[in-house]
Length: 420
Image 1: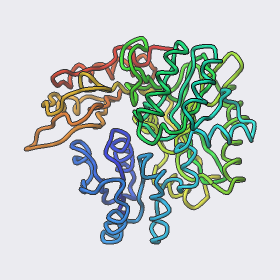
Image 2: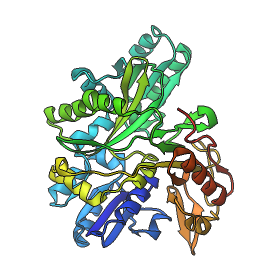
Image 3: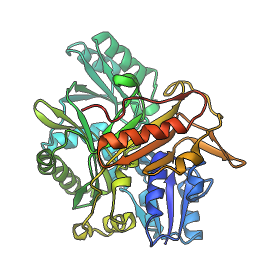
Image 4: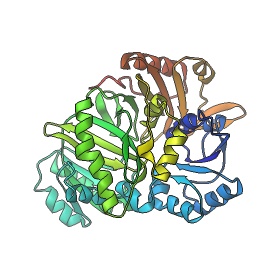
């Protein structure tokens, strides 16, 4: 099989790394890819939103399966375009990807189908939103309705801070058009857990659990980022909780989307919080999480190509998906200053040494390759993933990798995998 992967981050590198293990795969292309991905796939200089060029490339190269890793093209309707051109593609159609593309849509879906989530109101007028905020007890959660690279959520500790946050989103357009509509939510407390799931429109198969670390600094301090690291399995996600989630959240969500005429085929990501009142949905994503993919996919035993094809063909109920009985931890090495101002172009050292280490994978997110050397080329540069029999072993191995792989102004958290 020839496969095309759309995207160029750590998630896409992890997907390619796993797809390469399938005996069915003979060649993988990636558009646009990055420096590290170029070691595992042929990178093609086409942007993820250039649908016509991607379709032309897929036809020209006789691509058997296209895998879309990123949210922007999915929400933009890339799957519909590929299907209209008779091409096989893994990911939700535009009318299903809205579950991530519009937080207002997903909140209304949960309300309609009694799926547990935080109380909320939606606003598209600044003055009305401001008036509402001034009646609320802090902390107050503000969410930009549209896509914002995982950064469109503000947790405000006072009404004044919330008003300023609304102004940034709705007036100053800090997140562009994504913030013209805003969801204002009640603040929930409790540990978070991410559960990605394979879906074929009617069947849902949850993957092993993971837990993300969004804040830039240790002890969950600093700004929200796209993710500074993750671990799998979650320490709090028991078989009993998994059963409850299947009954109250996972299956009801997939059934609700089908009833709405928006059958979801692809990877549906459930961002959950275990509150004093039980598990609630914080957010949905319409694709593999990043960096969650970097700890979940290394634990997958079943051929990923087979699973993706079952999702497309609606035969997921016939699959027996197997997982390793182990643990994985991914520590993100970021550029100093991320998620705000950072520099690029520093040489990365230690990659050859890391490649010789057992139970260690290095997934490239923001790198470029020139003359056989790798250089930093983004905010999140690398995801260093360690595996082990236990979380403690996996943490130790991941940080051994972090110590080896270096570049100037390297920034990483020292506490990935520690928290409950």
